[in-house]
Image (tube, rainbow, N blue to C red; front, top):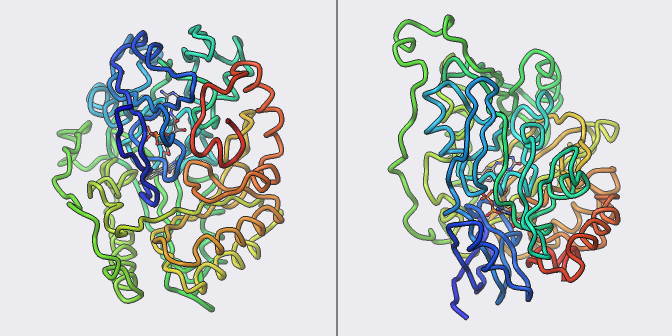
Length: 446
Ligand SMILES: Cc1cc2nc3c(=O)[nH]c(=O)nc-3n(C[C@H](O)[C@H](O)[C@H](O)COP(=O)(O)OP(=O)(O)OC[C@H]3O[C@@H](n4cnc5c(N)ncnc54)[C@H](O)[C@@H]3O)c2cc1C
């Protein structure tokens, strides 16, 4: 077996996999192994979703062709390995942009489907499924089937958030968003504590499609939850200052900045975190009124391989959502536990989410979501177990796209439709050809 060492974005587990990198749909079909296969995109999920220790991983990034584009409707048919960054590069100058985007553009269409990704505008625009009309899936018996809201609809919904375990997405038809400029009109609103942050986020729910708060992760006590709320929307051509109007659909080139190797663990300590926190908060507050998409959506993409900054043991991101009914007090008490845990909570975002959709395992639900990075240190697993139980008690759940440590029983408490999803899996993949390390950990595959 050819061996490739792979890891998720958090790099807290590195495992040997039998990786294949096909270029065509028929090569993908030939690469599927009945001993267990999982698809992989650009490896931006944080944990073990796109890992399959000692088994087959099919990396889809060479299936990166456009198949058709209708300028009038904005419908793009493309292969699943096309990345959002590629779409921006090729369609941005023509006035089209991905309709839904997560906080990095280094993700493939297949990966966005498998996690049903969400962005800063979830409360207004929903998840990735809202921009997908249909897809072609290679399923376990070797057939290629169409899945859409009207054709094989149960398979369609089970695949959004289905963490790659329903089959290989070969291609998809997406609706792009028409834009007049690649600029955003934005505002930064400093906040003094959690209640204030939540108030501002709520106020902008109806005023602004994009809104997110970045909190000072070293603020505790009365200052817990202080930070800055950034809100904004796509800028129209006629509102741009004259200087920017000259190149309204400007693109941003690849960043030359890179973290070249795993930094020593000592680099991250309470003091350096305090300093970096201040720098980040100052950056978020000081943005100009008009800013390019890169700074607005993808500030972390400016430093390549930044995960290495967390050191050899890697890091996790813990992202939960709890319903509004559970209230600000639940968010406050969970945050308080994190910030005073003796761990090193770091980069984070807080936002309000809109309604859940029909996909069995899609993460978002109406409520508050908070995502925060922790470098891996002793005691972290125990902390996440405690948080998991409290999130589930509050009627919430955690995001599988970021997860590394959740247990199978807890998944079933958080996602009450797991049973229905497993029925769909059994129907389309009775022998569990599609499996992964996450699938085994959460008892979603063999
Ligand atoms: C800096 C950063 C910011 C992020 N911000 C957000 C955010 O704001 N919102 C959000 O929702 N997520 C966010 N994420 C997570 C990221 O969007 C998701 O994990 C996404 O799924 C990664 O896509 P990928 O192409 O890298 O897929 P991978 O990580 O390689 O794989 C992810 C899943 O997709 C499956 N998969 C990939 N391709 C295929 C295919 N062709 N067929 C079948 N299955 C496939 C894999 O099996 C796996 O289950 C962020 C990640 C990073 C690193």
